[in-house]
Amino acid sequence: MRGQRRCEIDFLWPDHGAGLEYDGGGHFDSREAMEQDRLRDALMKERGLDIVRWTWPMVSDEVAFDLKVRELARKLGAKVSTGPCCNRLVERRALRAFVLGRHLVW
Image (cartoon, rainbow, N blue to C red; front, side, top):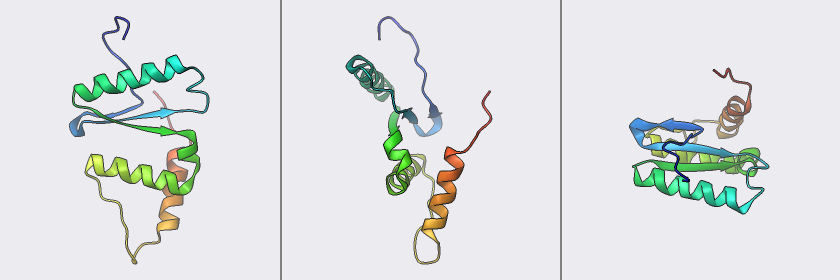
């Protein structure tokens, strides 16, 4: 990691050993950037963190986004409602709107 002693991650749940990295549209303009990210993932995995990567195509597609949210929920031990009693399409769209909406940053 070129002598770096720490690295940044987009979202981290240390109690669950999970993290999320969001790779925006122009993130992998170079092979070097992609390789650097894979190295960071490997180092974090060695330290007990399981990193989930989301890309813009995954987030922009409703079904792919739903699958990625479920993957992350399993890692965090969270329940996601399913079955005939829930309206999955409405829930999925509400969750997607919330995640993609404006958020306070500090």
